[in-house]
Amino acid sequence: MHTICAWCHKDISTEEWNPSKNDSVSHGVCEDCAQFFRSNKPTSIEKFINRIDIPIIVIDKNTDVLSANKYASVLFNKEILSPIQQPTGDVMECAYARLPEGCGRTTHCTGCTIRQSVTKTFETGEPMEKIEAYQYVVSDKNSRYMKMLISTKKVDKVVFLRIDSREEAE
Image (cartoon, rainbow, N blue to C red):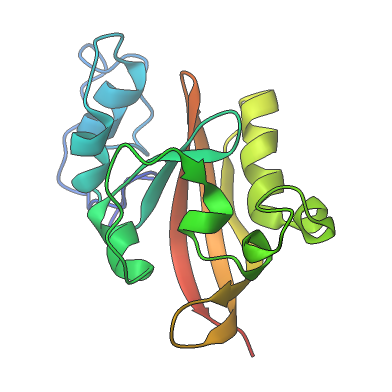
């Protein structure tokens, strides 16, 4: 049986947990992630999220995207360069973000699971794990409904949005 890091999904079955070294770390998180989350030293968010091999988006309190890793670029089939400072719906190609009101200001946005999850994590500090979310996506080629599993984690003044899976909805 393999044990994986709850955040980056790295196999940590072989990592040795040393209580004197890691006294405030659960064994469910790899040492690299634990170090990042408990560190008070400035760390490059881009460097950290690019070593995680699943899509990660860093969002500010206004639900604007500050940064995204290379796997998010692959998932959304477009280059996402930092610093971004764009509404999340624009980065994720939400169809409703293209309406005149824009991302976060349409009637559809009030029921957006992604927005609600990020906002709740900002307000409470509570992480959310594998929440089912649906999104109507429009790209240059087509439009479709997508089903996602998302997770959120607040670190200092940002929320990390991890996209655990994404597939066309039936």
